[in-house]
Length: 69
Image (cartoon, rainbow, N blue to C red; front, side, top):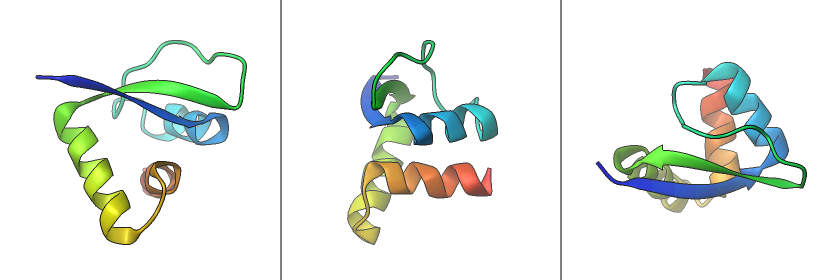
């Protein structure tokens, strides 16, 4: 299965790490306003499709998932 790297904001990264830690793979948080996360091909496709369909950013889509957690 292929892996993809997505760039998300640090606050969204923190929500995901706390609420849905198994959803993505990543290393430790780095300094800066954005973080890189590694997701499987199916997760990547789902997030991109949701963002396009709902006309939202990747951050907004991941935040929705994190809040539902």
